[in-house]
Length: 451
Image 1: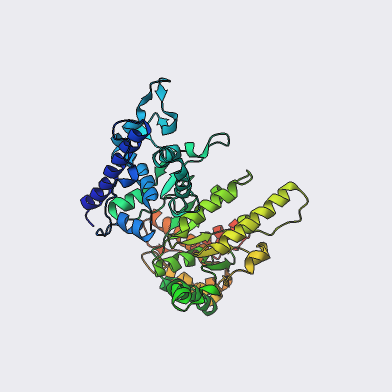
Image 2: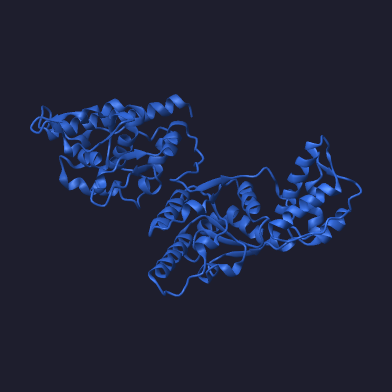
């Protein structure tokens, strides 16, 4: 869809908003024309439009109040001047109208609407319509739940509707262009979008793991058929939960990424360092934000080192223990209710609470590769520009040194840099053994160097 056409549609919504604002203010101040009602102002017709905004409004069956909230939130981005009327002063008190709401911001000269602004537009003339405001700004309804609209939280002693009402950049960009932006990692979104240039042929997995992964792949491909066309929604909860467990470097993260790549889904790795908070309630809030954003985007959520969030519950000997157990129970419920795919990764299955493990559809053990598998990984790793000295007995290396695939790639990196430094392309046995030794030292293990 052409960008100018998308902008034209949104501008029509702002034109309608401007008429609504003028009529509400006129009616509220009993000015000429006050007997008319803003609900009688016709909405722009979206039924003949095939753009992203019209599609969203019609698909979600949004009503006039929802669209008013969206138009109000878009106005500062598209036509901030239509809100300048709210800068008018109350002549009795020589100050702005409290009921107009709004927030002042030093970096924005225009009027920034708040929940109170929407409340004024909808209910100033008809107080009984306040229920409609509550409906639009209900955090369990589509606009706030999917973060189309964002109502900034206020301090406990400040009315909730005094929070700034805005539209997320993600949705505004989508409505303007039809393109969905990738979410960016930051304080408000503690997760990374992860990708890989590798393919399944580049991964060495045993037959048992491959068969179990096929079940996840089948769910990604046919889960909607199972639930909807086959009518199993009554018996099977939506979503799929998998546990990948095993030593570091055995391919858990790579496999999750490849599942996303094969199913054309984005994979987001949750940043546990930003997720876990020492403040009561903050961890749940951070996690809820991740699940809320991901819920309707068909993502795969990947929790690495999941023990930090999903570890075993403890005996309730203190208030901290009780809080930790409440947190674990909350996480369990959020994962169980999530309609998408969640993959948890842990070094040890025993570290996780059994209440979680009982609810996994699959639990896949990524064990250390066998000598044969290590040999294939070594061969694949050194099969391009960076190659091994032909005198190196690669089979003997694979047999003697138990390394995971991730560690072998670390050896490749070390050897390649060392070889480039001396203007070569062939790795010597000494360089290879130094790389192996470095990997063993990470685990406080020693290895004898081969002469």
